Length: 333
Image (cartoon, rainbow, N blue to C red; front, side, top):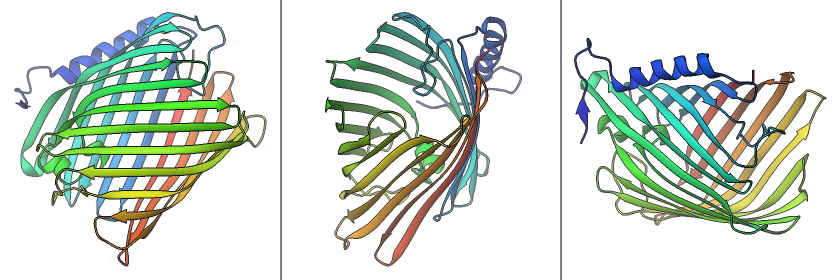
C-alpha cells in the first residue's frame, strides 16, 4: 500500500539513504572502486519527456567495459545507486527520487548474485500526489557451462521510467517484474539469445514479452561487429487507455551491434535494427532503432561517454518516435 509523505520536519527514507550514501562513499573509496555520474534526456512524439540524473558507486569494477585486472575471483561488493527524475506526460509534470543500496557476491568467476534495495519517491504536484515506495531488484548471473549463460532477476518499482505514461504518474502505476535470459555461444562466431519478461502491474494488468535472436560475429572479439536476426512478441492481458498496452504485438528484423577504435583514446559504438511490426489487427508496419556512442579516455582511470539514439515505428500512416541523448562520467580513484 502506498504511503503519503510525512511532515517536512521529518527526514524521509529517501533523504536518509542519500545522506548515508554520500558519507559512505566519501569515507571508504578505494583505488578499484568505480564511480559513474550521468545525465540523459528523452522525449517522444506523444508528448512524454524524461530527464534522468544518475550517481552510482560500486566497490569493485563490475561494469562490462571496465574490467579490473586484479579483481578477486570471489568477493563481496557493495555500493549505491541514486536516480533523480523529472519530466512531463501529456502536460502533467512530475519528479522522482530513488536511492538504493546494492550488495553483490561474486561466488566464482562465472557466478554473480546481487540485490538492490531502496526507496523511490514520486511527486505529481498538479494532482496533489506524493508517494514513496520500497523498491528492490535481486539478480543472478550464472555460467551454466563454458558456452551457456543464464541471467535471472526479479524487481519491483514505479513504471513511469519505462514510459508507461501518462498512467505512470496519474495513477502512480507500479509493478513487479520477472525476467529470464539464456545465452548460448556454441562457437566463437555464433550467439543465440532467448528471454522472457513478465510484468504484473498495480492496475491488475499483466504482460509477457518474449524475445529471441541469432547473431553472427563478423568480428566476434573487440573491435567487434555482430549482425543477425531478432524476433519479439509482446502481449498484455488488457489494452488500457492511458498507456501503450497491446494484446498482440510482434516484430522481426535485422540487428547490428559494433564497437571499434577511432584513436588511441576514443572508441566508437554503433548499433541498430530494422524490423517489420504487427500490432493488433492493423496492417504490417515498419520499425527501426539506431544508436551512436563515443567513449573518450580522459586519463588511465577516467572516461567520458556520450550517446544518442532514436526509436521509431510507422504503421497506419502514423509515425511514433522516441529520441534520447545522454552523457556520463566514469572514474576510479
